[in-house]
Length: 187
Image (cartoon, rainbow, N blue to C red; front, side, top):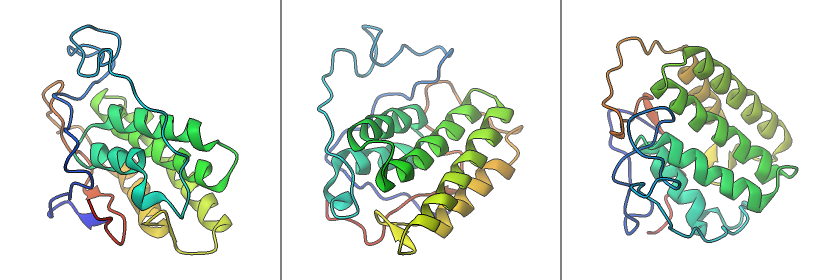
């Protein structure tokens, strides 16, 4: 992870980012259900299960990180959810993914102006990361450092979002951090 003053690094630069980010109840069309949606009738391949051995080659994992770091919180949530279903919820990688799902949900709740939802999802993400860290043998998992993930979740829960002005559908990084794996995978 790096501070927000530095730019996020695209992990999959060959993959095009969506034309907009979806926020439920907003003015932009639903990505899958609406014929005007950015992913309407696009088939999503079933992702390969995430593991500590394959994270650097797991396109779904890297794409979700790109989405998150560039302010596509709904899209990152969806991608991590797909990956979670492929991986399974009751294993170490699945529990780790649950934390990422909850962190992206916190970003989405900011855009929905649900501060209670932001705090609830961010706090839950921090708890999941703490549990995953206690279960892991190392300080890093799938390229990410547990301490920094817990810090990110804490920061997301503590920030004030009252001053935030975001145009509906415009991807905007709202957290003062990006999530980057170490070492960076080769694109």
